[in-house]
Length: 314
Image 1 (cartoon, rainbow, N blue to C red):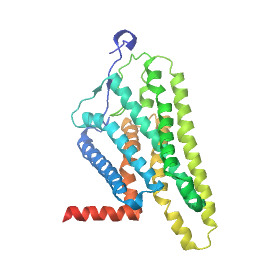
Image 2 (cartoon, helix red, strand yellow):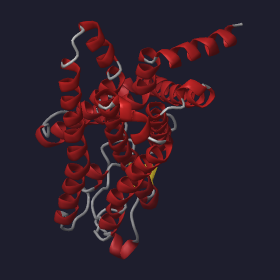
Image 3 (spheres, one colour):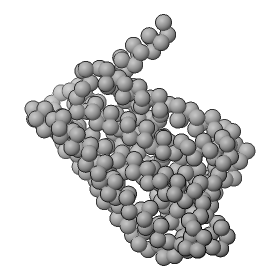
Image 4 (cartoon, rainbow, N blue to C red):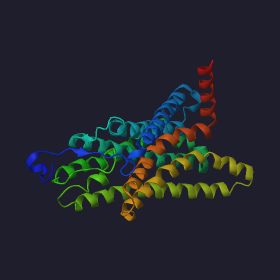
């Protein structure tokens, strides 16, 4: 691999990394990651099962929650093969094509999640600011259209990334910083000019994450304006309580993302494991916490979950 580029010797494989500098603690990391995967997969699976079985949950708000759960499962299964291979079986080499595919799916689901959080904020806006029009605005057909729009937008944004990398020569050691393939990690490795890659990467981040977060913030400004017009303090709190789960989901998605970006830009002298841990938090915490938050804060889901657990016990 050494000094040859892919132009002369084919596309090279990549070497995945566990926790550089914390090798002695990797057995604890295996337990932690196993717990995170289990909670994420079982939790999101239960959310989908409960929404499917409970007729009272066949509403736009819960359809969007179903999309979020499916997407979180997608994020978890995108990283699972290489994380298991790296931490459990110490298999650290991944082929070029497999790495491109994993990069595509990780970013594809991440961009979809941002879109889902945006349409969920629109759902809360219509429910609180225009409750009389809720049923006519958020029909089942429109819910499907909004979900499909988030998927199509994500696909269109991410699809060019592998092809922009394919045109570049790779002639370095090709050692990645994580146990999975991410675009910001991969564009450090080519020997050629990566200006187009960097520019396009910045464009899609601003036009998706940047735009979505601004629109989510706008929706909550409008929601807060409507809530403050309610005379009763008890009613104001009751209305705001319907937004708590979504606000938590937005917080646990965007804050780690900002943390990863800040670490990449300003933390160049930080130990390598800091970047790895930040990336793990960004990819693993939202899929794990989302079902927990919605199970705790949503009365119908909580009651159905308690019934399921009681049946299992007896």
